[in-house]
Image (cartoon, rainbow, N blue to C red; front, side):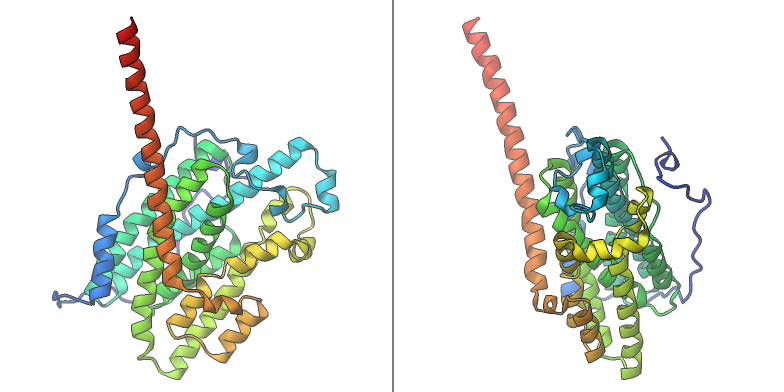
Length: 368
């Protein structure tokens, strides 16, 4: 089935073409590069995996309850609009909400794939080119598995959110080689990683938990890559150049904050978009979710050196300044451990099932 048959609204059949700016950079220096970046590159090679084999696609999913989370997670819960819905319509709303979330994930991952390939082309250092090449493969795998999940399990796809599209456009059209890092590795990937983590931790359904845990294992490396590359480079920039990067961060963070409100969902249910912001503000779950989504971005921005008073005021205005105290390395290590623990539990259970089947056959043969 074509993805176009599953979209909630029609999307153009032609490709979205973003003009590229800047240079493709070659280097003739083939000596070893930065140790930490090369170690990350080695890890990127070692941790490649096949989404067809690692994900248990036989797990059943109810499209009207994909994540198994409380309805309080929906912004209209407890409002007059919620009371007006029948049980069937509430199930459809859950489907739309999950579809919107995972659709933005797949669109963002395609953007990450294109941007990683762009970094291979434009970054001047060979060690960064090496790592970006592994990230391009990671992002292709993520596009593949999120697409399959939407097609086979959710059966509905939303178009790309305009705020996400705007940030992708700004990220890819800037001629400076560091801007794809800043836009994608820090802002888009940072917010996506936090969103994956919130859903991974609250879902009661095994398939989305698997998908998000394994994707996060990759994404933790990607954000670390952006930190390593930009932290070194931004130490060399003038105050004026740093201010330009800060402007980009401030604008991008507001775009990301507005993106997560999912106004497209509520429009499809006949709710005036002007009321959505108020409902989000009055929803304890949505306020918590919005705050947690910046748990990876804020400490990363601080770590790479874009931490002027204006950036801090922006995060204070958004209510996420305290996130600067988060330990990024601890969060990334936790992402790795959760994926590895999930593998251990899954494959131990499968091994136990196989052993039980063999034991049953042996017992039957002995008694027969």
